Image (cartoon, rainbow, N blue to C red; front, side):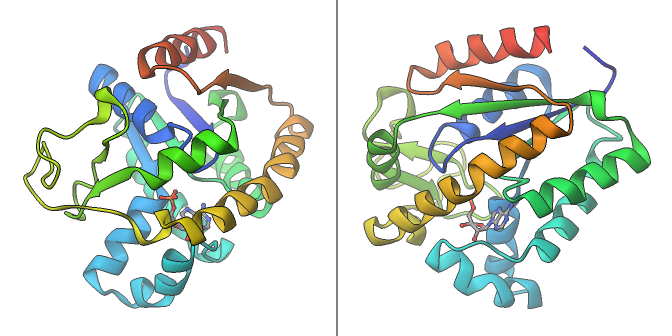
Length: 226
Ligand code: AMP
């Protein structure tokens, strides 16, 4: 492994990017950029940006590339100095964002510190996962639970195991929004993969439709070979 490493998790919402990130954070002290979590923090704090992106968050549509690139690059620039590795969860989501990210990388680091891992989960499973997902309403926690699988079941159905705040369903995890979010993911996925391949990257695909531990083992294998 290089001294510094950046892992890009590519995958539909609900494909397990967050759960895998959690295992890397707890196991290795890596840091996770979740652009979705950052957007929700802005909204909860009622910042100007939070107000600007409120509609996109509710409706499950994408925030503008310009805004997201700004938020993400600022975070990466700051956190990569201190962490051995960082995970990009939910960024880049479009080719414009990927190009913005590579531009930053070329200016400050090198392209070979990046590994790209795609989590592959069938849409039917994604729909089940998202509709049964519960998240902590504390903006600084945002832990994810589910009543569908033992590994993610909260101790109390109402409260977060970590901070005790109320568990809620995300507005964009409601059935009528899920279909649009999945469609947006599929709309961008192929062009993103082509972009990465043209930039000289291998996109490693992992079967994400398994227990977290098995997914984590496959991930570790990919990263050590990357
Ligand atoms: P997530 O938590 O990753 O599912 O993201 C939740 C929402 O945040 C998305 O539906 C978008 O509205 C916004 N968002 C997060 N990341 C991005 C991104 N890279 N590009 C555009 N919008 C994003």
